[in-house]
Image (cartoon, one colour):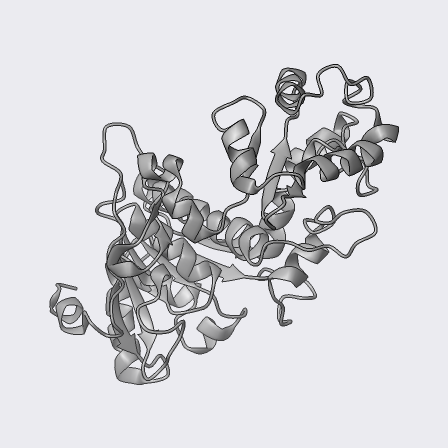
Length: 357
């Protein structure tokens, strides 16, 4: 889908490389500029898959000249330094646009290019805490806990950077004018809250944790099974909830019949806790598989690899024995793409230098 698009990625951590991986998965020619002598994310990390590598020292004049050559024939650049670092190296947006006016210059940070925290350190959890995205990530009275990197670095960061890069490339191809993408995890994770805020606008979500439509009910949580596994339940619509009760033998229970009676939610949660602990995860999986009860086993990635749904779609793959998720999304009329190999550092130096400027 992105054949003919060239992206230069300055080696970084987390969301920047992930966004570049996503673009490479979709067919873009991504050249990652690795640091000379650096170790980065290890040898041939998954998020470098499908990219080409050249190692440069961006404080060396000769290597900066090579970098500028790459910029002249690129559609986009991705960097993840704190504001001002690229400018001090002489390869900030103004410098790069003087070489390539149509360049989409992608900047990935936690706090953004402006504001009182722009130059402050931070990590995934800090950004989503201040943006409001962490607020609902706990049971009542418990400290918020969120899947590492998924909400901030990847959801609020990498995905928004990738969308911004594509928007910039489209604009450049239509107008010849480049742009600067200011992708901040703080901004993106806040933007991801708009569905919840829509629900709050409808009266379905409250500020207090544990009393709203998706964080309080007995039919919207995970339950432990007898073998230490978990089953995830989220049967929101009445017809799905009815199927859930029917499969549990609770269709005639008057308390469970009151699906949205908030006063009963804690009591019914306790009852379901006692029910789910009576069987293994495999037992419950067999009962609910393929039904509309909206119940699924909680699998780790290795288990997900072997699940029938994955065997049909190959969402999880393990080329060379390295477990990873396949490229997404898919496109009608095209075979699902396979992840390309990750390069060794500086693997494509001569190939890249031999290409025309």
